[in-house]
Image (cartoon, rainbow, N blue to C red; front, side, top):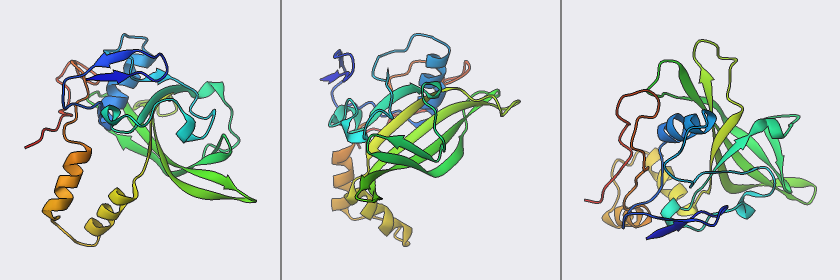
Length: 215
């Protein structure tokens, strides 16, 4: 099967049954680190793009099951100035922070990734209405000097599905198992995941497993 790079128009052949769906650790510790250090990446599936140029559903990509219906981008935050990083203008709406500076531990003693989660609010009349679109923003931070934060970030942008939200809500109410039909639905959505990395996130050790396989 082939995956189309939405920005450059290139295609990449992926093994049958696999999807590009990197974990937080791989996304920040491998892809972002290599981008910052100007090192070659194993593919061009993550491109530089101004994620604040328009509303999220008009950004390149999306609608691709081999990218797990997600959009991945690099963006240099120095190219834009925001009065308030917790409310970032984008198109006719705003990205608003709902989780801030969550640690993502990496296999390196020198840096840690910080993850921000933002939700998109679309302008409606005189106010804003919250959408189902979410953004995960990752930046690298020095452990010894926390004020040293990478200006380049990597983003995972996607639309949260109502069906998935319902499953999570049920689980939070104390359900410890799901019906076979629910399990089949989840398997249909994401049968197998791979992140296509052949080396460690940061350092020389083996990468953390990021593949899941149908049983």
